[in-house]
Image: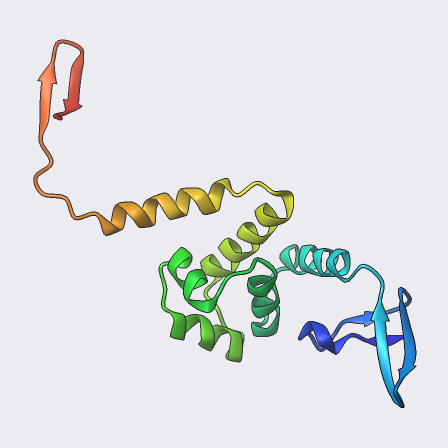
Length: 143
């Protein structure tokens, strides 16, 4: 058994799929299909009840997101995401959303993330008066 600490997770062990080699007098580990291993680890994490800080960091990095970008998607701050990763306490709603983002990312379907990004764009646009008019077909927003 190999304790796979390179993942950043303390509880991941590999039963097989790795080789330990001596390279220049040092032990080196070669792991078969690391990308697939990380997808399986991530899917397992996304399906558990709550994420630890290290698990949040693992999923965030697997999605290729910085702490700042994840914070934007969650409507939070980079400092808050950093705190969650260090202390492991994250509000349930954010935890669920991160796991949903990851499962979508795995499946190549990022509709939820795209929707959140559209909402972020809307938040950035400052709007003046909202004018509505009654027409023959009913109420609508005026152009």
